[in-house]
Image (tube, rainbow, N blue to C red; front, side, top):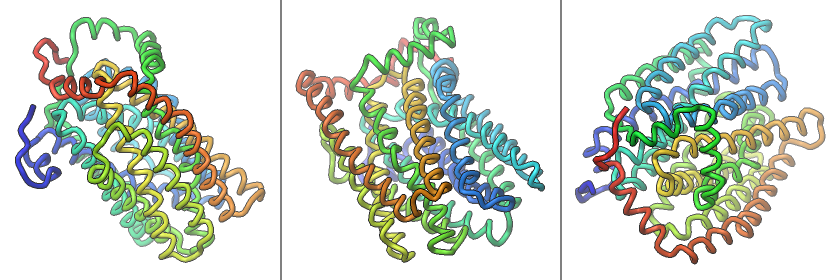
Length: 440
């Protein structure tokens, strides 16, 4: 096990683990470009239409493209060199983003959806490859710290990217944002290229996943048969019953209630990022007992729902920013808890497919959530603020069902397997040092 010097564990990990530092820098820079460019995509669509459906559709296209390609992406991340996959995905996304510069008329609006779709297919490979690589470049003791850093930096970058993106889009225009977004992908690719990310397999491992079809099917079968992994893999999807719709409606809140356009949206999304940064820090500091984490996920869902119910009752910017921060502290905690549990409980051979299955589930549910909310508004079934309260309340109900079904099943599993968690931790701490593995 790698020795960790005394002092702040986050800075020490970044200082001593050069490969994690490079992966972290790659993720942070690419994420900044993503969030920086997101508002420009919304603004580009709004140049041609004010339809809530078409704005919601770009979110659904992103999610569905990610979802549809996720099974293939999971197979690729378990079969091929993850470092090389991430490198080529970054280069591809840099080119795709530049394609948005050539959209100049309303008749070309379909190209926005086509280009974003391809961009998200590449992201569907990059994200599980990144999450699956973290346990292979950190020790068991470093894993929690690494994931907190990853989520924390995502949140900070999200906050800065959204805030900056709103102002830059408003004052410099969308073209400048797309060029900067492309450059961030190129810088990310450079850090991936410089990182040494072991990809460990036995010869029998490679033979079992030689067939793409069989590899994908076996991945689903593995997840279905290992319910201790399935439970944390359901956490993000369970949250997306409502959170997708709620985050989408922040776009409309900025325009229709706050009347602040891209600047207001940047501030609301920045508050979302701040909240997701706070959540993982609270988990690491005050909830070290991992046996309680599944239960904590349900509590976090309830807090998110409650926060958004209050957002629906508000029309003041400052109050909304505070409430959005509070709500997304719960979503950030949900994310980091579920990710760490999947990493600890899943063998490296299946990790890519498990993470891709997780993304498949939650992006599909998020797509339905967004389109349901957009349709209710488009057909004037409900007002925007009432819709926010509806989905916030729905998430609080979902949290109750999580406690009744998922937390109970986790408790039963822990009672029947009292030493499993200790064994998993031991295996994880030494898995990346196994001598019998081969690199591809």
